[in-house]
Image (cartoon, rainbow, N blue to C red; front, side, top):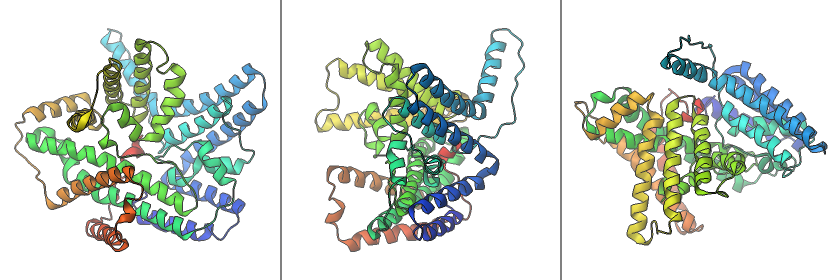
Amino acid sequence: MIFSSLQYLGFLTFVFLLYWKLPRRSQNVLLLLASYYFYACWDWRFLSLIIVSTFVDYITGLSIHRSEKPLERKAWLLLSVGVNLGILGYFKYFNFFAESFATLANTLGFEVSQTTLDITLPVGISFYTFQTLSYSLDIYRRVLTPTSSLTSFACFVAFFPQLVAGPIVRAKEFLYQLEQERQFTAEKFQAGLLRFLQGYFKKIFIADSLGVLLVDPVFANPTAYDSPTLWLALLGYTVQIYADFSGYSSMAIGSAGILGFEIPENFAFPYLARNMSEFWQKWHMTMSRFFRDYVYIPLGGNRGSRIATIRNLAATTFISGLWHGAAWTFVAWGLVHGVFIAVFQLFRASGRSFGSGTLGRLAALVLTQSCVIFAWLLFRASDFATAWVYALGLLGSDGEQSIGLSIHISTAFIAFAIDHGYGYFLAKDENFEQRYPILLRAAVYVLMIVLLYRTYSPDVNPFIYFAF
């Protein structure tokens, strides 16, 4: 059941109408049942994995909190980490590491046959695994008190608006909302609907349009297209992946909002970042904070020498890349970003200015986003060979096919530019939107609906991050 499908709209409407007629405890039960049904629509067999993670972390959370013995607390934590990472490792990484080991052994002269299993990747497993892990880790660090309500905890783990692709919500941000009364207000309902519409527009009109009309055909056969088209498609993917993922996050936030919940923002207009550290403070922010708090800082962060800091950064970006997908191209993508961040930090540590003045800020923006765009090539390409061929084609291609800036493609790019421009001015002035007449704002939403109507297709395209 995909957010951009009519099936989901019907499901959300049914849950919404029933939800607000129930008392709080019954609301939580309804949310839990609705969330399990939502996930079972993908594959009911994998619902058992969520239930296992829920029971394990509920029990270990209470046990860690109640125990005063350090070794006992650590043992319960290791049980939680072992079960969650064991499930994630088997379903997502078993074949990847088995194939990589066999390839390495054969390269070194050892005859090793490749052993792979017919494993289906459960949708959303990377997201809800990290979410439940953060619960146990925060209790162990004594920054969170566990809930005694199994229903509340199960709702936290399986909450359907953000279950399969985030944002990654921590227990301290969400559990208290489940355990307090929620009141329906017209203002929150309107804000949730508008936020859902914004995300729906990003997904359908911007992301899917660029994917179907430009990105997918070019990346499927890059040698067939001329260099201008390769450049355009790379820019198209840069916009597509942002619109696709931030669109999902907006729909998740909007869906939660009409049910009376607040979940954290996941994007803050990352393509306006002027250095790579700032980019990761604006892109997939809930994941960035997870790796910062549970990987980078525990490793030592920037508290040691520069070499130690770079080592910690490399380890964090390696894991981040691997989290995105079981392929070495994703690992390389993460490490490339780590190199960019390390270079920036070394440059800043030298005492030199970076991005001062209007021209300096513009140059920093162009340099940073150029690095981001080229790194997306590793993320999108199916393997290193395809990425290399595509990169060479950017410098000069013998391909004869071309895709130009049609009205549809151009409008998608313009809509993206407006999205980021609006975000820039809104970040500078919280009252920016209120300065414009309500009729003008309404006209914008009407235009979005008209464009969606003209481009709607019954063929629903999955969100890109569903694969992770």
